[in-house]
Length: 75
Image 1 (tube, one colour):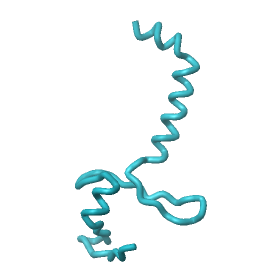
Image 2: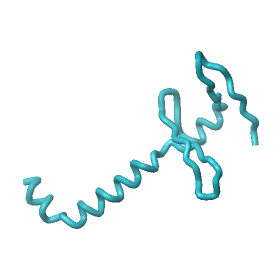
Image 3: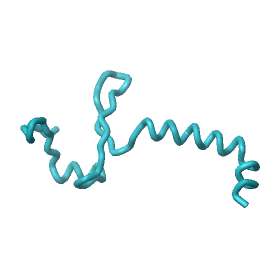
Image 4: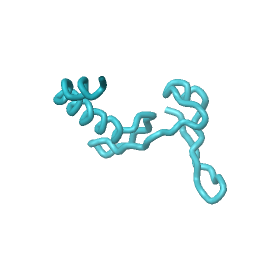
């Protein structure tokens, strides 16, 4: 485990992540990260938006249910 320090950036506080960590997560400058609270009460930093994932699951169910209708509309 590597300790990280919060630093003042303008009127906010920022967290600087080491280059190795950014490479392992698969993000670079300008990408978005999401801080998610796990069921155990811990926090997880991830490049994936859990809300978007839920929305996609709902969309996939709808597309599956109305597959024939969507295929007809696409013509």
